[in-house]
Length: 318
Length: 309
Image (cartoon, chains in turn purple, blue):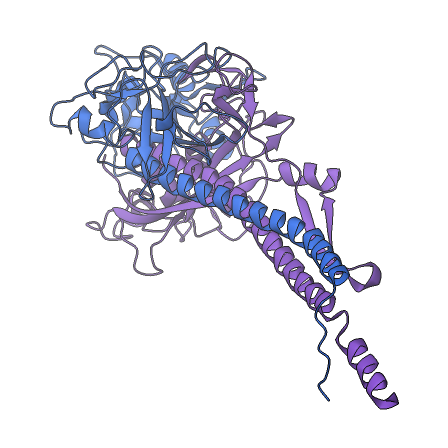
């Protein structure tokens, strides 16, 4: 009966331990699936927090648009003159009068649509043929008065042509005029401060700012109108998770989730990352690591920026 | 001969069960954790969409500037700031929430309150998302009001600009009649230094006698204003002056308009602060208190009074 015993023994060795093999296989598959799921969820929650910060910056940029529109409404002529000057356009040009009909005097009385074109000062050189005040592409010709702060003292003539516009844009911003929370009008900071709008001891939920990024005239070359024009206003909003140790805070919830203590900080914690790898005995392992402290601090102090744009028509009304 | 068929031994079952338990329990933990994180992210995304909708409504023309009551004293919308949750004591000493008020020709305050409140309760504002999730809403506002009759650039919102002066066109004779200065162009008189980049020639040939002749668009001077050349020079300088806040040196070429000049003594710009609070594990209506799972979202923006007057 030798062959039977041999076959039985062989069959038993063939079939022994097969359940364990299947369980191990299933376990590996489940582990990999769980790690993938974990990694995906970690990434999406981080993205949500980033989107929230950018949305906060977006609404500051939109608030800047409202601030600018308010000023445009009340100072439209000053806006028109400022944008006209910035491109060398004469805001007073009168189409009804011929150019140079009266000779040199007339060229001064009605210098034409563009007066930032030449190099000669007519007041010192009345016989100058060009109608000119500044060479737009050249260097500064006229020395600015000394000791006058805010007046551009260097740069190209084109830079200096923009100084009316620079002044016009300057106060459409947070942290103006002083630059800090104690000597500025519009301020967004979670530090306690005397807010002009909200009162003494106010704290905003976060530190942020807005400013006019650019105010550009959109007239086409050769097709500009001389009593009105289109401008593109671009404003920028910025928000920080942490700025100079100023965290994002809740205005209504304290650290103990009550309503009487210090404001709860809403700053995101350090992130954990999970990576799958094959460890000892080729079993899958989940390795978790905390975000490095320096990376964490760097991430929190990085500004989130958003831009808002608007197209508006402006005309001279005086 | 029949082949003997062997089943799984008890030891195999025990070992397999132990391995399965050792793997499945952590895996289940990962999966449950992942589902919880998904839920949190989903709630955050819904809160963000809801907050953005509310803020867009507040910034739009459908909510008139004058309808917002920053101090929350008006109960026209069915709620008053006194009854709603206030800020913490350490934040402006319990500032009340803003409410809405009825205005002539404007939408009813009750309708505007619906932007912030679905539950019609007067002790808290609750918005319910399309998914049936509840969010507590907080709305604070403040106006940058006029501070007085004169522009105070450090205390109130003012509008800075550079006027557009011009030089009288009497340049053929090289006779600058402004300020009674010498005629010769070769002397490079101060008018060049004051306004070298802003000269615009206007067809006026009469000698200027009033400050508005020099600066078109300026407010009219008081009746009877007939300054001497020296006084006119000083008045021009004063009108142009802005004081640098640090050095106190005058900054030429800048002027400031006060909101009062535009008929806005109550202010033309308002700060809006919107907050949402929720608990991913429960709804507010169930009366469960807030815990470490509570999440919050805050947005800040500004609204201008852009209505025609």
